[in-house]
Amino acid sequence: MRVLVTFEPYARSISPYDLLSRINCGQVIEWGRNKCIVDLGDCGSDALSILRDINYVAHLSIIDQVISRDLNALLAVTKEVLLSLINNRDGTFKVIVKRMDKKYPMTSIELAKKLGEYLAQVAKADLEDPDYIIYVEVREDSFIVAHSTRELFRKRREAIPTDWVDRVVGIVEGPREVYETMDLIQLSHALGIEVRLITSPLLIDRALKALRLGSLPRVKVVGIDEALDDVDIPIVLSMHANYNERKLIEVSREALSKGLRIGLILGNEYDDVSLSLRSRAMYEIRLGPMTGHPMRTTVALAYAISVIYTTWLMSSDASRD
Image (cartoon, rainbow, N blue to C red; front, side):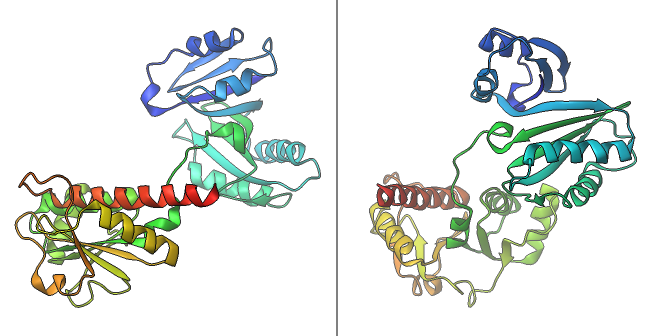
């Protein structure tokens, strides 16, 4: 059995022989481009599970065939592989294509789509959480056809539930500098949260251009009147507030239990939140120790979001126990 092992991006310097030392068997067939092919023919039945548990291993795929670059042959072989996996049982699939030869006339996405449409005749496609993965690697003179399972292909990483991102909104009044706006855009991009900026659209355009990003639907320029639309619990974050993180934790628990949406309102690098927005908030909360020095806007927003998400995680765990 030959296995294609892909390493995590941070492990480019890892030698594949380190893998073999972990399982005390196998042979390196090929090595390069942050992955390797190993032959596990002389290994025990637990070799794959041991490899899967190595932190720097990103993906594992079992190689079925290496065939000539003929599209019809590829369609036939991938269908054969998928049918053998499903074996008259229910099961979903996803096709992943890596085009190592950039001269190949179809892009990875185009080839994956064509294969997926063809294989959908025999099984149901699922792009989010498939039971099986059909992996195809396009090389200069061949197609590598491999397969994997949900458990084998990628490690299970714990993460914040995706629906939580819609439960918190960042509202920033008057960011003035491009760098400040860039930081806020990057935070929205990384966490997926909605960020409403009460500022000039030109500043957003300059920040997006500097980041080499197109428009982001989660970053919105709003007026002060609509800044709190669809927000159930507006909270001002200010170094001049009386409450601290304890109040934020209490409010977060209430929001989680009642399905409410929190809006975190912040000023900018120069000015605190205006009286107009403060008058519409339900709470004012300060973050961190009393050093006399304000946090940068993006740092304060990220800090508050982390408190909220941590509270929700702890509350969710407690409710399951």
